[in-house]
Length: 410
Ligand SMILES: [Zn+2]
Image 1 (cartoon, rainbow, N blue to C red):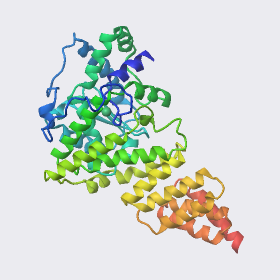
Image 2: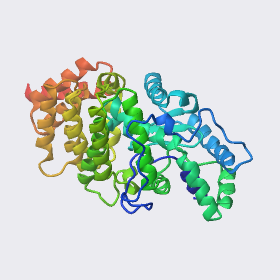
Image 3: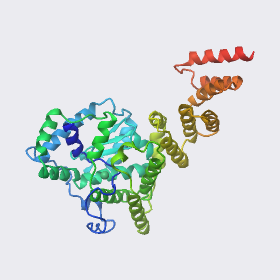
Image 4: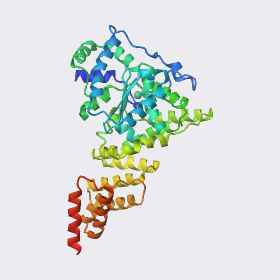
């Protein structure tokens, strides 16, 4: 626990903070923000290529985090796909500019909305985030926010402040000996980390501000920034299990205030003639082939209200709607409440006429039709599945089912 506490303290996590009552001055007395569109790097406290001496407090913090980074590097949870890694690292580099060599990105298979950055430049991006950002501008919003924490040395300052106030040095020594923290541990550990890693509201505002500057300076449509938070708020409201909300939002609820501020900044950018692009096509090219896997992860968490809302949002975005309708059918089938099976059937049938449905749709449809006694229609679906997936691992079983439907009807 001590190791976790220290490591969490060192994380520049929390892409979504800004919770009420998090400490720090009220908005009225907060330091006036820099004038609009001052360059993000001109406001940065961190210097490119800077590394602390090993005999300083910050230096020893780095050493502890380097152990954590080693574990991350060799973790089985790391995404191996080269295209995904190159894309995320490339986007981080684009945003980080002269700081690019200082930042190392690890895309990690964890179905939770999260990205964080440590003071030594290790950044983790989790797949639950990649499922929810709908285009490059939205992903750049979160990455830019994390880079903003790094540029302002927020976690170093937070760490030094904590050391000054209490005797955390002992905790640190224990943590250094223990060697960091789990990369993608159990949910309770993650929630503990998330809650400890929260920043003050002022730090969050500053990271949002710098992130927004990076977004605009790199030619993105700044209106995409507030959409992420709006979507997260909607997803949170649709969650039937409010006592255990989206991992990251447990301690860092996305606030209406943050969304409003980002909208205001986006309006200012447009007034200054900075229109920008969303980069949706590039984003889809990389992530649509993986989205089914991320959706399956999400469904397996059995948070159906939340998942349903997420599907609504992705359907509205409009990419490969057939796949999304298939997963809506899967949701109903898996939930299995009264009246869900006809709904599942309707969703599967709708998926058939939409773009991007996976071959598994026909297996699901076939099995459901078998269950409801539509033998001939079931056979058609199962045959279609084998046409599309002749090498499916369960092909022998499906063939047997098809034979059985013949015996019933012939
Ligand atoms: Zn943050």
